[in-house]
Amino acid sequence: MISASAPWTEKYRPQTLDEITGQQHVVSKLKKYVEYKSIPNMLFAGPPGVGKTCCAIALAKEMFGEGYFQDFLELNASDERGIGVVRGAIKDFARTIALTSTFKIIFLDEADALTAEAQQALRRTMEKYTGTVRFILNANYSSKLIPPIQSRCALFKFKPLTKEEVQGRIEYIASKEKLKIDKSAILAINEICEGDLRTAINLLQTAATTSELVKGQDIYMVSNSAQPQEITALIDACLEKDFLKARTKLEALLFEHGLSGEDIINQIYKKIVNYQEDKLKIDKKLKIIDKIAEFNYRLVQGASDRIQLEALLAQLIALE
Image 1 (cartoon, rainbow, N blue to C red):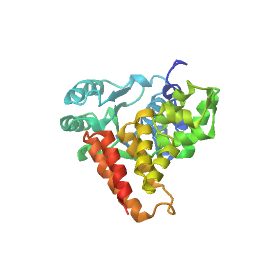
Image 2 (cartoon, one colour):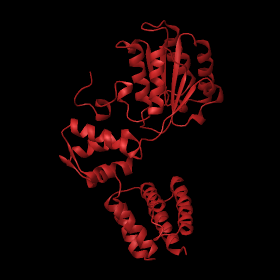
Image 3 (cartoon, rainbow, N blue to C red):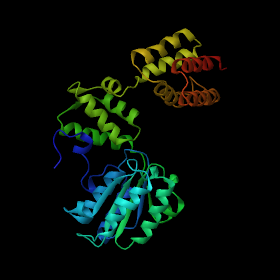
Image 4 (cartoon, helix red, strand yellow):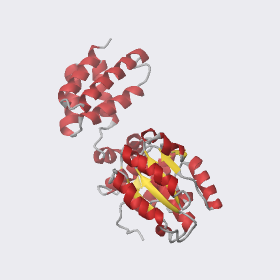
């Protein structure tokens, strides 16, 4: 039983496959496995917050019933990345007999964090206990898993949720919590979360602590993001070749909002990509994106946020 005071991501976690938001191309296949009472080894691949873990747990609950936890082991590879977790917890669980079915399920979250040695050991374990255990591997990047593991799993690709799917779930949670939410808040959540439902729900819960009516500005405030019009004003100042105005806008983002250099440069990139053709021609847009990539690399390498961002503004203004 989940406590009423639990984070909303847990409080409203889907308990069945029918409750999963989006990913119908995956859910439909998982329902067939439930009907057949058998599953292959599976690899769930996709960005964070799109339902991979929810699908694995919901599948186990429908496959094994109320006592699912007796035959379901969930491990997070980012906690223990080495060969010890494969030789220890995984092998110990695989050796025992299933209690509610003819097989057990081992769900290995963030499997792409396993070391190369651990992946080789996992490969051998998957071969040895294929009669009694099925593996569900969860990875943000399936390419980080060695080919022998990939070839032993049925691959399921998870997509970022659509804006409509995110909106539907957010409105459902808001109604359950008797919370009023403005349309601008929905737009802000969709812009920030980019299909990541976990981020969307966390933003909603955090903003709900500040007001009974959640507005767009509340979402931007709790997400440590600038409002779109502020980024637009910064870009417009560059296009007008007004360096002092652009620098003033930048300082407001850095010191008044407390944004990091990477936050700002990512928001500039998103705005540039979607800038109207009549305000920014495609050839100049391509040059700007190239400059953004260069300065983003410098920031990742540890250069000064302020110096690099001001240099980026100077480069954008100098472009013809």
